[in-house]
Length: 173
Image (tube, rainbow, N blue to C red; front, side):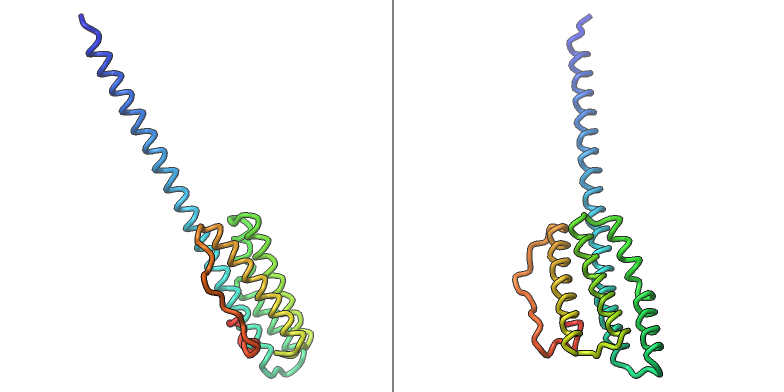
């Protein structure tokens, strides 16, 4: 009996099965990478959207009339708590790489500082308020830069620089 055709067939089958398994593994690996990227994009989008909405809410609440300073502080702290920033921050801590987590945590603390300042009576658009918003703007720009790098998106070709009048609009920062 001639074994050569049988061995050739078996060797060809083994090579074919091995190649298929390697291709499937590479495809699964590629899908895992794409899914992880989609997850980080969702988390980054949620976080930056929450940061923006919270900033606008804090500025609006601080500019309103309140029956007392205590009620103003309570409204601001409730808005901070109810904004979802805590949940969004925890998702960042679980999924994002360390540089992005540190940058997002810096933005979180800037917003906390803004909230605490308004609760203590800082006037909207005062020099102290402007300094807090400027710090938040710088921290947010750094965070977005790190997020874009992590997602493999190139840097922005054009940057928005807030004009002095933009301090009345926290969304511009």
